[in-house]
Image (tube, rainbow, N blue to C red; front, side, top):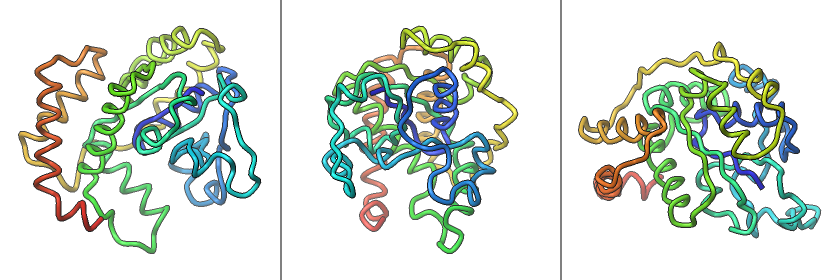
Length: 249
């Protein structure tokens, strides 16, 4: 399977829309359940999510209701949207290629708050500050890619909007198939409406590490060893300093 992964509001739906347009068979519907009425304004062209967004593993395969089991060879070449936690929990045999996307944490803050306001209007603000959730999800995603050595292309939300031809075209070249022109045409930069104005921020030196990671991905640069070391140190610091909050979440 071709996994499209990233945090919510990081461009996963945009990538699904592009790959659907390119002609790839897809698992997931544009608007599951009542999302067309409740959430369509956040992704007018569809989310393309399924129960596999939390992972392809014993909890979702076989299907909890029908008992239908999907074998890896049956879904090879199919595109599925899976959030970072789901990628980590997915059986390795199903993960053929990974298209990973990351968004600047400041823009993510505003965008995810707007989504949650419509998705869960009867609930309080997010349990974790968006910047903390952003870090935990992206660190888990990158760690899983490195440890399990998934064949991966990682790009940023902004890079795709700046130059769809380069970003989408290079991914289709890597995948080795798909309608290039249709996929590129599916990217609509006008759909991005959030601005980098977070309500909450991490300590300044932690934010600097976040920015360094995002810049490396956004500019298609290899992450240097010194930054990898800093990422791991920052993760340990974040977990230690926010242990009580994480345990109560």
